[in-house]
Image (cartoon, rainbow, N blue to C red; front, side):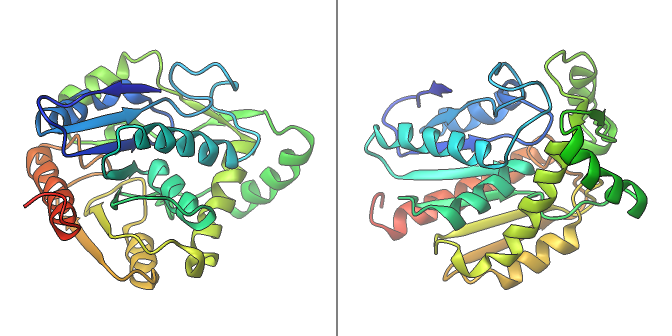
Length: 267
């Protein structure tokens, strides 16, 4: 994991969790926005992605690997003795949800960015059934993810950078896909187990990857005392990379500041 410390006195710590296929280096702009706004940031590369070598690229044996990894990042955030916020994008949002269903954490709030709770494009019934068999006999078999940089964002600069990004994962294993499917199912089936933490869910209104209707359904069912939903109508999947990203960031920061005020940490 890596740490970036705030300019001046820090208000809180933001633990950020990236999405599938990607890595922490794609979050340079967002890291700098939080840092210059007075927040420490902790982030790493998930197993099998980015610069990690603990698993084969694009492969995991269990979704729990992600949960255990992010839990370690949160434990590291506690050492600052400041309020801690968890921000998860896409699959990172799903990891955050599953973590809140499996563990009890000391968090001041959670931000989910286009959380991966359902996909726009899913494999055919035949391929889905085939993947169940392959998951037993050949779990490390790789397949194309079916995702493109054009589907993720309208930001041409980000698209160009991604096309030349050697750390970007383009193929995922059968086991990885099956674990993702199970995690999405568990996110709904274990809703009653979720820790009651203030939550902001932000969703791209023109998301080409995550099914926004499923995200809204999960949000409506989530038994949380304090929750806020914001749809960014024109945005694709990566709302923190979109042309409107300054506005998206300010909205997220407002949520964080309001939570800090509500617990009397800042006035």
